[in-house]
Amino acid sequence: MRAVVVFACLVLTVSAVEKYSSKYDNFDVDTLISNERLLKSYINCFLDKGRCTSEGADFKKHLPEAIETTCGKCSDKQKSNIKKVIKAIQQQHPKQWDELVKKNDPTGKHRDNFDKFIQGS
Image (cartoon, rainbow, N blue to C red):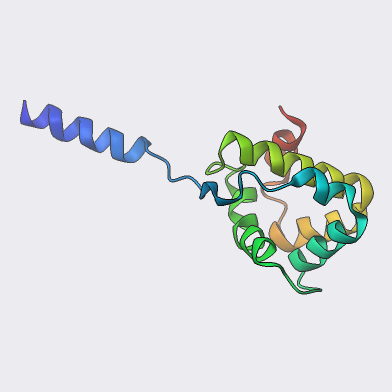
C-alpha cells in the first residue's frame, strides 16, 4: 500500500507542470496591437533596442522558454494573448519578427512547432 501512495505522489509531482503567473492574464493586448507606437516600443524592448516597461521586461524574460516549450507553462488566456501579439508583429513588422526569431531561437530548432502553435494547429 505504501508503494502505491509513493508512486501516486510521484506521478502527481511529475505531471504538475509549473505555470507562469496569472499576473498579466488581463493585460490589454488589443490596445497593444492597435497602437503602432506602443507595439514598436515592445518590439524594441524584446530586441534589446529600447527601454522596457516592467511588463515588457517580464514578457521578454519568459520569451525564450515559451518558444522552446511551445508555451508549455502558459495558461489558455496567456496562449491566446501571445498568439494575438505575435500575429500582429508578423503582419505589421515582419523584419522585426525575423529578428526576434533569430534572437530567441538562433538555430531554428523550435520554429516549426512554434509556428504551428501560433497558427492554432
